[in-house]
Image (cartoon, rainbow, N blue to C red):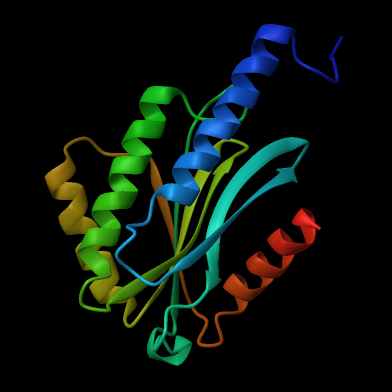
Length: 174
């Protein structure tokens, strides 16, 4: 028989894990930039998905200058829908390294990160897909190990997916 609610110890872990993940996601960007991030907890297939997203685009950033959407997805197993603490550290490290590799020269901008329901997704917009993938490969060569990544590439010069994500996340907070 399936229960609608997990046992008490699991529920505490999930809540504690969600709060820790949300705190890490919202606090992750460096304070030196002019970005304004927002956080949200959404539901997907009855599981919590914790997200952070750019609430306000950085001054001077024109979406048309980065017309290519890149989604990097790390699929993981987890009874609660959240990654294990060790896997979370690996994801955080990869995300930090990737941002450091693609953002300083304006190749790409990270606009959203979501974790939950067995996957972590980073949503970037880039000047050029090929250059982004080359940088991703450089990062992966230096990290050791092969994380279970899936990559989606598409043209999205109006940043449609980001706008929908931001709209949906904002509505969930109301």
